[in-house]
Length: 245
Image (cartoon, rainbow, N blue to C red; front, side, top):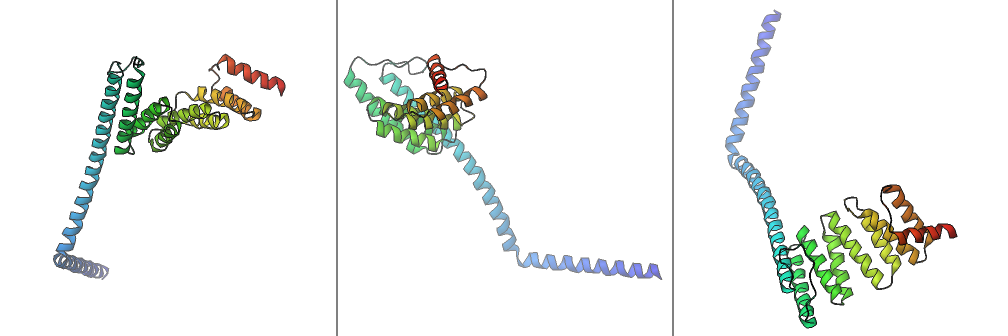
């Protein structure tokens, strides 16, 4: 009897499975367009993602190429080796030097704006800011360095931009702003000059009259970089603050 019930239950289950399969087949036939549309949408999405990744790669390559070309042309216009390496000499003709810097500052800005969100674009902002500073246009240079800092996906570039902002702050006589910018650079772990940035921050805080923050920055330097040696003048400055304290 149990066997009969079991056979009956199995038959019933098989019948339900067959009916379910029939209903699914019927639904699939009635909604073939919907199913195919869903598959097509998935394929289109996958293709779009692939194209986007390829596009981003192509954009990065073009940005790097254009930045390298602009940099080589600048070096050549200044009488330096276009391949890089050697320092750029100062042209004997001051008007030529100024005109070249002005022209290429604008060209670097165009590269930076053309390729936002790329490392090459951020580096172009740095180059533009450097030339603007040399032209005696610190406000424009600051804007370019801020753009480099904020646009850089590469944190090391952001740190370098912060050091450039620190240097501008020092030149305009604002050691507190300079110290804060140096500390911002030191906070970025991938930046290879963090130790130096901390000692510069300590020096600037001391110049700003904030001995506590100067000591704090230097103590952080000593704790995080025990094998590094501070510049003698900075070490002497901190030693004097400690004696006074």
